[in-house]
Image 1 (cartoon, rainbow, N blue to C red):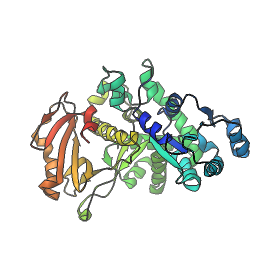
Image 2: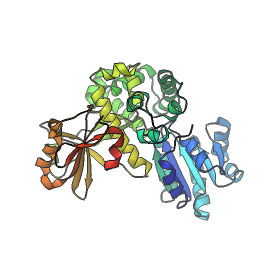
Image 3: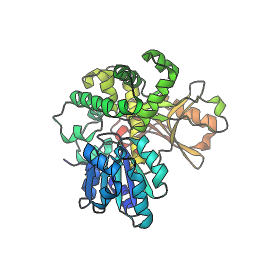
Length: 389
């Protein structure tokens, strides 16, 4: 079953404008399936095959001349020398739509792009399925299932797959193929423990020292590992918003897992009923809402221009989007019927920046239909959050 991706129009548009399109993102988010579906007549090669990667690295001109264009090169990070030769070909002929390069190791990809293809390519960062994408293809899909199962396409195209088994395999593959090779991690057991400690912190302000202490590693090691998790599309760090009054605000970022299913697996949950009865459900719901909004921006090829806001006195807004000096403010609440008391964070924002600073406010919750909570604040369904941006 094919689930239509919001990236499709964006990918087709940039393909018509740039000679090279780079598609990056975490493993198993659907990059290869997407490019092969949209560009079925293009030549395709995957450097995941060691012999092909060696050929591309050792004899790049022979490798490229033996293929026809448009050419899709998957997992290009395994042949970093290839970037320079793609540059040579593009400089000779800047016709749009010549190469599509994809890969799951964003740090290596971006290094090759910055050194060789800067100004010659469009870069799209792809994430896995949003709930709205699933809902358009599977109208009876439940948001609770999405929170627990996550958004990896294989878990929705093959409904008989047990998420726990799938994530165990995914984690093993990710640890072995990406992290060990890049970080030269001495103990995968330490890194596995680090991931699980990180998962229980999703939706929380990040403290490197606390995390390092709990896992038993140095703070600099924690920073290095987090940077790799960011670059490989497993987590995002949401920065705090501040203007010139920033000294009065919390400056540490908030951490979110990109996929709630992976986070739930790392936390040790085996059933949705276990999640919904646990205090972590609020943080998991917040993670879900934040990531739906980030997916919305990513699918349009835009940098997610969102922050969180929190003062040293504890006033907080989960999601802040600035437009011409004014704000769209969103709070994530795992509630079916939030009341006016849950608007206090948004009102604190107005008091801080002035009544005119607020464009609109939303409590993103489990209500089936939107309804007003005040003159400028509505309760809206979680799966519809992106509609209010």
